[in-house]
Amino acid sequence: MTASFTTLGAVIGLVLAIILIIRKVNPTYSLILGALIGGFIGSFDLVLTVNTMVTGASSMISSVLRIMTSGVLAGALIKTGAAEKIADVIVKTLGEKRAIIAVAIATMIICAVGVFVDISVVTVAPIALAIGERAGYNKPSLLLAMIGGGKAGNILSPNPNTIAVSEAFGLDLTSLMIKNAVPALCALIVTCILATFLSKKKGSMVTSEDLEQRDSKDLPSFIQAIVGPLVVIVLLGLRPVAGITIDPLIALPVGGLVCSLFCGKIKGFKEQAEYGLSKVVGVSVLLIGTGTIAGIIKASALQYDFINLLDFLNMPAFLLAPIAGILMAGATASTTAGATIASQTFAGTLTSAGVSALSAGAMIHAGATVIDSLPHGSFFHATGGAAGMKINERMKLIPFEACIGLTSTVVATIIYLIGF
Image (cartoon, rainbow, N blue to C red; front, side):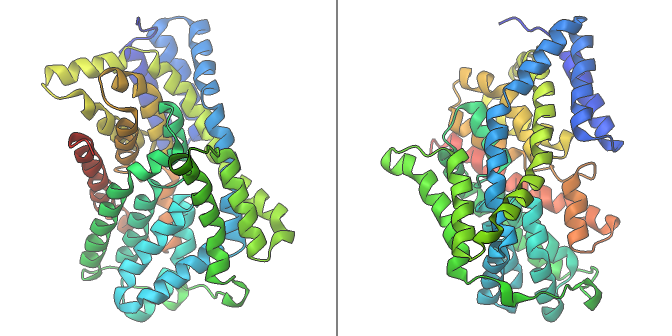
């Protein structure tokens, strides 16, 4: 297949987009402008560039539709108090002595059942800070536990990044979620080890000013809170278990409706859905912008040059999957954008090289969690703000976060190598 754009043009476009994002230009516009300029430099054909951008954006529509409907579940879990109740029960069950483990598991589960990773951290943060203040844990250890738990839950959740990767590789969403269960568990274990290590180091402590006054009287029971997510799991699990396909576009909003109904908040379902939509609109628009530059990169010689480089270095082609996930997520400071660009660009190349679509998708997905929380992205600031942490102290957590993401990536790669 002949490339329509040069590697130089694709790289210039991506670098320009990164610079603009770092300069606080809207990420969607940054990606679109990077695609336009990179495509033109790589082809000197403006019509071809625009048509390729439109094609790339169009390829994202099915993912965008599913992501928009996932907002119904997220909105219901947050607004009914179900997500907070699940987190609260887990933390109280494990107790103050195991607070680090409890916080990590709580965030993992909240994210795994369909709440976006940044919102998962924000949801668990008040609970984590309250128990941290009583047990004497510092903020860095608590925040790392939440972030690491979120990273673990994110790669086995029906979240935007998982949907985008499954769409690019033509995979069943449930299969991709299950594939990364072991890498997620390993990431959780490393999270607990590193967060416990940080708890014994110097760091800012939780004070009364950091704590929020929460009214727990209006929260549903644990049984009520967990029904909605369980319905989603059952519906998505019908395909591998019984051969019955329930698309996420149906399963996720149905789970949200059931959550609202069982939590006794069905009268507020409209507001819950609107809240959820407000949380996914930004991601949906970002994916359209991501599609434009992914279209240019996919139609460029970059993927072939990447394979040639691996051959020159005597490295196997399957390493393209985790490396692409790591680099693209780091470039965009977004798990969703990074996983989308990497999977859209290299899906065909990886499968042509003999790497199974499921394994390639899992490795890209895990790789996208390594350096996705760099300061030019919103996740860095949202999580730091949730814990009331200053930027310089938040920066020190990045290497630890990278270790957690790298753990799941290495494990996903090992699983592919042993053919599991």
